[in-house]
Image 1 (cartoon, helix red, strand yellow):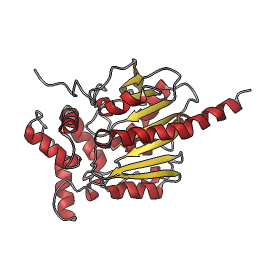
Image 2 (tube, helix red, strand yellow):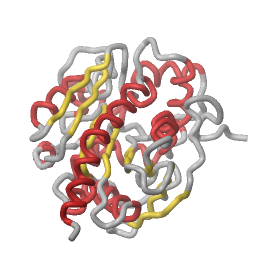
Image 3 (cartoon, helix red, strand yellow):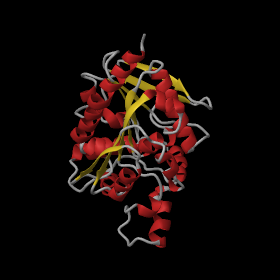
Length: 311
C-alpha cells in the first residue's frame, strides 16, 4: 500500500475541512477548495506552491481557523485538483480569482497569502478587477517574480551559465521522485529547507512533494523557468508583506528584497534566520503571525469602509 500524500498525525497533519467546494476556472478547470473555521469570521485565502497541496498549510489552517474563515485550494494538477493541459501564469491568475469568487460573497475581502508559486499566483492576478474586489491585503512567502533558475542555489557551484543550465535541467526533470526514502529526505532537505529543520518538518514536506504527479511537476517547472512577473508585481497595490528565509536555496532572499523594493505598497519585509524555502512548515509561527497581523490591520478597516457605503 502506498503512503498517504501527507502525514496523518502531528502538527503538520491537515485538519478536516468544515466544508469543501469546487471552483471552476475560466477554461473549465475544476479546483478543489476547502473552508475551515466559522462562517462570518475574517477571511483568509491560502495559495500553495509548486509540487505542494492544501496539506502544506496545515499548521496555519489549524491556528487561524480558531478565529478566521480559512479558504485553501489546490492549484490545478496538485492535490485534489485535476490536471489540466494549460499551464501558465494566466491560468494561475484565472484559478485564484475563480476561488475568490466561489468562496467569498460579492464585495467581501480577504487577506490572500501565497507561498512560492502561490505568491507568483498573487502577482499574476494583481491587475484583475476580481482580485481588487476580494483582496484587502496580501502576504508573499518565499517567492520571486523573475530569474528563478538563474538565482537558484540548489546546486553547490558558482553562479553562471553552467549552473543555470544544470539547475534548469534538475528542476525540470521528468524523472519520477519515487518513494520517500532516507536519501530522498536528505535531497529535499538540502534543496528546499534549512540545515536545522526538524525531521517531522522534513517528513511533512517530503510526503507532499513526492505525491505531486511527475507530469504536473514538469509542466509547471517550465512555466517557472520562464517566469517574468515584474510588470504584474507593479500592479500589486494592496498592502503587501513579504517573508523570505535566509537559507532559501530555491528562491534566495535576494528575491524577497527585490520584491519588497518594487512593491507599490510594501508593509514589511521579514527575513527569517535558519529558514529555507518551506517557510509555512519551517517557521509556522512567523507565517501565521504575519497573516494575523494583516487581518488585524486591514480587514477591520475594509469592514468599516463597507458599512459607510451601506445606506
